[in-house]
Amino acid sequence: EKGGYDYFMLKEIAEQPKAVADTLLGRIDESGRLALDEVHIPDHVLREIDKVVIVACGTAYHAGMIAKYAIEHWTRVPCETELASEFRYRDPILDQRTLVIAISQSGETMDTLMALRHAREQGAKVLAICNTNGSTIPRESDAVLYTHAGPEVAVASTKAFLTQLVACYLVALYLGQVRGTKWGDEIDAVIRELSQISTEVEKVLATMEPVRELARSLAEKDTVLFLGRHVGFPVALEGALKLKELAYMHAEGFAAGELKHGPIALIEDDLPVVVVVPSPRGRSVLHDKIVSNIQEIRARGARTIVIAEEGDETVVPYADHLVRVPATPTLLQPLVATVPLQVFACELATARGNEVDQPRNLAKSVTVE
Ligand code: M6R
Image (cartoon, rainbow, N blue to C red; front, side, top):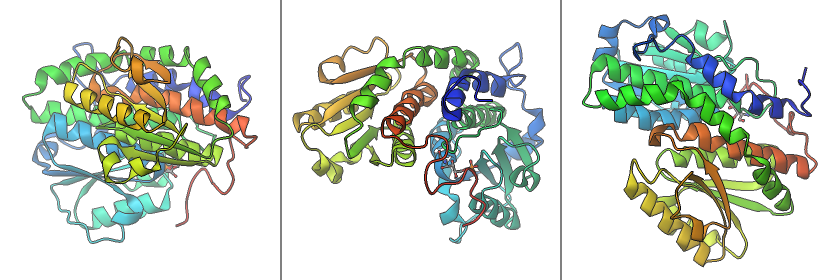
């Protein structure tokens, strides 16, 4: 049932192009408009929404963090993303004009379920993004957008994450389309790119051997840091989470702009630091900032592992290891940039003799607090 792979995780990583394509299937019509009728929240309600709140845990929370950038950019509606376990014990301000999005692969995560119950009690509309048909979270939501990743068996989430991202982009673009913003042309262009994105994920998977080799060479290390900006920041957090749960290593993700506010003190000779570099086109300021961050940490001895777009030559002099990903629109980059980090963590776990599919102390679905 592992389809010739040693672990479910490897199989699930390899299935990502299909999972992404399946999640897009039938949701973009021939004219490039989004068709999300299945969501069952009338357009007039979506037009009146004045706030979006996303609740989720773990990897799903990282997808939600990325969704915030997309939703605020394409819809100009304020969006907050919060850990479900924090949200449910606060006193959040919600009303009928709040759209709450609950993201969960299993649909059974206790904290996420409790957060959505809390939101509905206060009159908010809840949209679930979920991978498991008929599970509790979609059953208790006003609407659901299913991800079509297929069953995810490995405890570490991979293909579910990519499909959660796709679903989040669809919601963000749809809200943008329904509400009409000055980003109309950009939205149309991104929908076109999104519809082709599974091919790009496929290309990344075809070039992963050097990443595996690099991971094996770092098996004796104690710490790996991850840096990113903008949507690269949640990608950094996701890379660190994968490494913790699979390789049992000390791994931390930071917003690169925070370096000087503390984390740079951690940099020492030969410390591996993975840096997610945004496209040099799109938002060039972001790109320039991160290139200086790479220079800063390298000057202090870091061993830089740079994930950068094909054709980005500015990073070459500062990268001890360079991992190329295909060019994508800025906001879509997590779909390609996360894949090397999954492969990296999986290979490190194997090299350290860990159980890949069933990491210690963890359960696939967290139905208790
Ligand atoms: O089923 P869910 O998406 O609600 O699960 C949320 C987290 O428990 C899950 O993403 C967890 O962080 C994964 N093990 C990460 O790989």
